[in-house]
Image (cartoon, rainbow, N blue to C red; front, side, top):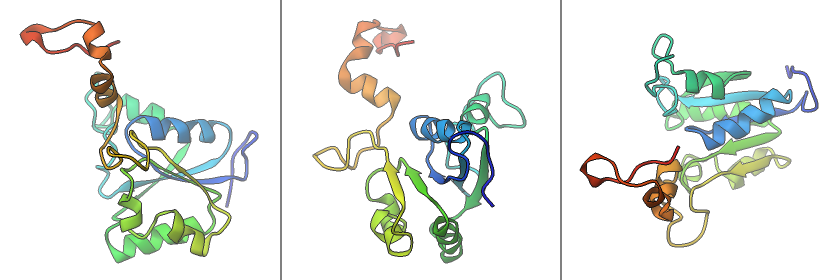
Length: 170
């Protein structure tokens, strides 16, 4: 059953994202009324934000994770197991949108990439977020905030910390 409010009411999103960029994208869709089903590695360990230490953690779940994943349903699955993969495919049958931010090729190796999903859900809208794109020499590298700051040189603008290491902006 698809429930929600707002302009995206009736849209079902399957969210395979983690960390910040992907969950933020899915959060915007959820806040506009889409039904967002977040698939997390069982037992809840895939999303780095879940266990991030912050002073506002509740029962070991960080405030960052709670904020980024509000208005979402969560489904813990082992996508490497036949059972977990089968459940994911069942959820994907009725999906309108898939979001993922793994390194390119990860979901393909699990049988859940765009080409495979299109075989049983040809209308799917597939959003893939990666730090370095899907082609080029860095395509298989993981990419997130600190890596982008380091590679761009922006850390050198904010100076050096104790031990002369670059300081993260912000």
